[in-house]
Length: 105
Image (cartoon, rainbow, N blue to C red; front, side):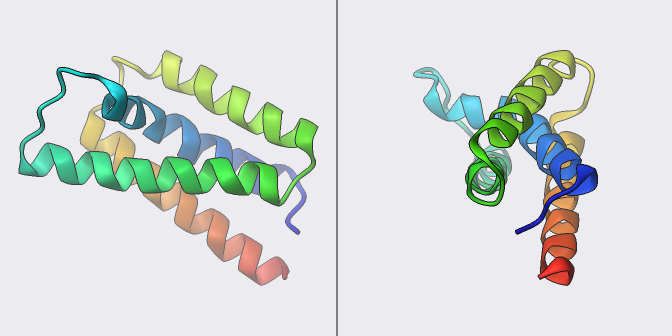
């Protein structure tokens, strides 16, 4: 559906910025307060949606590159960005991707 550099970049950014919070879901010792749980739920929704759209709207190879770029970005930003700001930027990137994808359709 959406091909081009900008949609792929936005998916990689949304995936990479939400990945670190997404991984917290699978840690045994993670007991989250109300605010942390809300942030993790938003990050999970964005991350899983971006992951699905990376493979659903592009070819297999393009999807793999998008996901790999997002994971590399998440490792680079693991300690650099505030978790709240990272999840907010992730949601904004995902919303921008959805806007561009709907305009292209």
